[in-house]
Length: 233
Image (tube, rainbow, N blue to C red):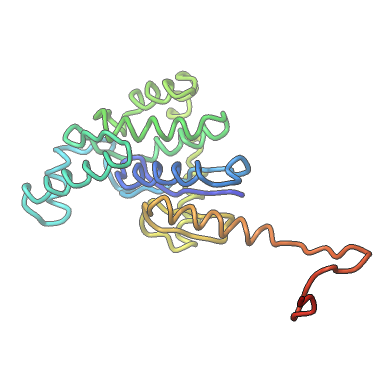
C-alpha cells in the first residue's frame, strides 16, 4: 500500500496531520507493508526567499484582521499542536519561499531519509525559527536529518528536482487538491485535512480491504457448512 501526502513545510496543520497519521499508522495491522511518500505543495509559490515582518503581521494582513485576532489564531494553533505532540514557537517563524525545501525532500527520498528530512524541516520552521528560504540554513538543517550537507548545497545551487516539485504540484491540481495536508491512499482514496487518527485509520483499513478482497476456496470434498436451517437440530 502506498500513501502519498501533499503538504508544505510552513504549514502548521501539515505538522499536526503528520502526527495524527503516524498515530493511525502505528495502529494499522499492515503498517509494515505501507510505503509513505511526501509530495510537494507550495502554499505561496510567489513568496520571496525571506518574508519581512512577523507571522502575526503577515496573518493580520492576509486575513484583514487586527493583530490581536491574528495572535489568537496562533495561540489556538499552538494549543492544538501541543495536543498532537508538537512544541510550536510561531512567534519566531521566519516565512519565505519553500521550493528549495521541497527540492531537498525529493533528494531525501532518493537517499532513504525523506521522512526524517520532512520532520526536520517542519521543526526548523514551526519550532526553531530557522530561515526556511535560505539555502545555507536549509543545507545545514537537512544535514542533521541524514543528508550530506555538501550534496544538499550542490542541489540548491542548481535546478535539480525542480521538475519533480512541479510534477507533484501538477498532480495535486489534477486531483483537485487546494489545501494541505492531503492524503492519497493507493491513488484511489483521498483525505483532505489533518483528520483525527481514527478517521485516517479507517481509510487505511478500507483501502487495504479493497486491495485484498477475500478469496473463498471450496475444497474438493464439498462445502461442509450449514445453510438455510439445513443443520437444524
